Amino acid sequence: MIAAVDEFILFDVVQYTRRDWRNRNKIKTPNGTQWLTIPVQVKGKYLQKIEETEVDNTDWAVKHWNILQQNYKKAPYYNEIQEWLEPLYRNKYTNLSTLNRVFIENICTYLGINTLITNASDYIISEGANERLLHLCQQARATDYISGPAARDYLDEALFETNQIKVHWFDYSGYPEYPQLWGTFAHEVSILDLLFNCGTQSPAYMKYVSNSK
Image (tube, rainbow, N blue to C red; front, top):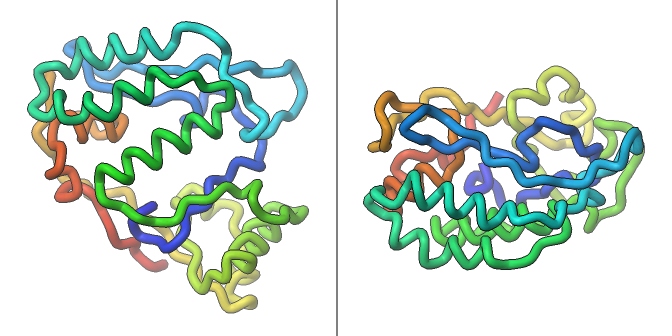
């Protein structure tokens, strides 16, 4: 999706939710998929935003890299990916949004994706779920808005169309299988799995154009 747009806005101004994809992802192992979770500080019942979520100061990065090394050291492109990926795990992060953006930007650089990446917190934020998204698009001078299909349940497409912004839904179905370690192919894994296995050939297994509604 990032490659399909001119600007990708990280929506860090909404509530952080537990057991979601914001601080964890899956990798492939000989025993099936395994979660890698970054520990974060959740302040009780306080409705903290993603941008306010802090990384818990533990040795998670060392553990994560050791697990990646154990499961992907035999992958064809392990050495190539390791050269720029391992140093990212050596950095000290205090903020989850900052951490995620660093990894996303470095992965995009490797893939040759030059899309402008910004944070929603860089913009003026409006009240109301749909109004907030619309206002972000207007501030970014967007003519088209591409979203994941999960937003169909709440997005007011008519509101966007009234304001001359076309809504498109990104289609995640139909991705081809790629050479993967450890038995039966699994789609629901981190892009790191694709990179370790396919390296510079990874774009051949990715969608670079969104499907309009």
